[in-house]
Image (cartoon, rainbow, N blue to C red; front, side):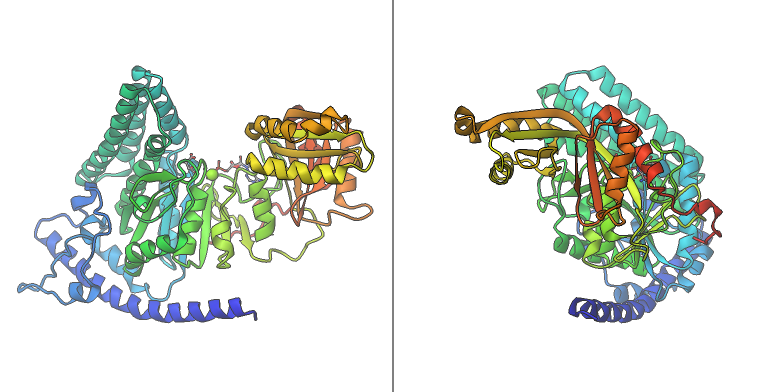
Length: 585
Ligand code: ADP
Ligand code: ASP
Ligand code: MG
């Protein structure tokens, strides 16, 4: 056992011990709260009243300690409702709360993130509720939600149209969003008080968005900060909706905005979390809920700076929010619930016969994520890797299928390729030397120059003339400044003809084979390139990627055919998980 593994084992053991002690204490405190709920119901007050659920949550609200709450009976025997925290919890029926609490001790903690399609409408949210209800019987659960599918795109459009002064279109977008969310609330929530309260909450959030857009219309300007505030509204609408739907079906829940939890830098549109601060906030805000069997429903995608300015972690980043929560709470597992049966051997939109991969290593999965597989945000694994927390990818619409499990070491079948992924939006820059053997020096200067732009070199493919030519692949937006910088760097060399040309192909695609024995005589790389050649597909360059992957560059128009050809040639056929025995969520 390595030192870090030992340290983790000791920490987890200690934490388990603390958890189990506190959990018992928390459970008894909460039983008394639920006793109050039962009594107040007898006195004509609705047990499931959301009370102040529509109020914005007070930042860093300091709650009375568990002991204070538990030992504060009133003369009539009822227990005082603690002022701040339970007032925001959506209570289900009392007998269900007791069931939830009875088996509350020593449960594993699962963070479950649900993507946009999983919360796309009322019927999808019902499936989410079924999954969470099943999980709370054997686990503590924290939920992270995306905005309803398509909502963030609409919000970004509203923000951009505001800056362009297109007032009517902005109003139409907000009206459509209002109708869509209200329709879901009307279907999901039957208690009139709770429904009214949730609709009011959603109206307030939408009004906030509209006010920001009005400001952009007036000033004909959209700052990155404003864009983050508007685009994060979708998650602030879906979280209360999902929390209310859970409460409606008997699961005590509370919607929480991640601006209270995820502390980030101020890089709007791609903010990075400060994990220590985030951990402290999650411990203070989420752990007490976990200990009391209340499911926190946290907004994905958003965070806030230390000063409280809202930020977003980047498009599609709710996966990252889920793993940030998992790492911050040292969860036992994080599950990303989506609309496919886990990670497939290729993007199913390109390769319909792609099948599910049962198990992958952290490295294989992060190669896939970083090289274009939409199913995982590129940073998803970052937060989990240090802590060794497993990640599962499952299908909300087929919850009894196993999906994919991502563990530090993955499965043992290391020789087989696991999956293919592809990304475009890349540019290929070629610097040609007129000297044979000039390439090494040119490569060194090219990389140093591109780094000053700064542009990230995504790949250094092997050229057909390796001794005199250097190729680098950068992202498309970085291509122009990179080429300008290279022309300055090599100006003298070009004047003396020692560098013949600097050219750029502004649009190329990178296809990556992940896993398997890439190199070797008849390794995957050689077989793939042969197959592509047979199909008359032009390969513009190829290279080993990071550790377990091999990449090749093609024209975007050849991307689909290249992926299909490589998938067929490598016979990347993982298990057909639909044929496997069913698992229980
Ligand atoms: P969510 O909204 O749940 O985060 P996304 O749309 O972001 O879901 O990601 C899931 C989608 O990713 C799938 O519907 C599928 O079309 C696409 N996808 C691309 N590559 C893969 C892959 N290798 N395995 C599974 N899905 C993939
Ligand atoms: N709603 C955000 C987006 O569409 C984040 C996410 O869904 O992952 O980018
Ligand atoms: Mg996603």
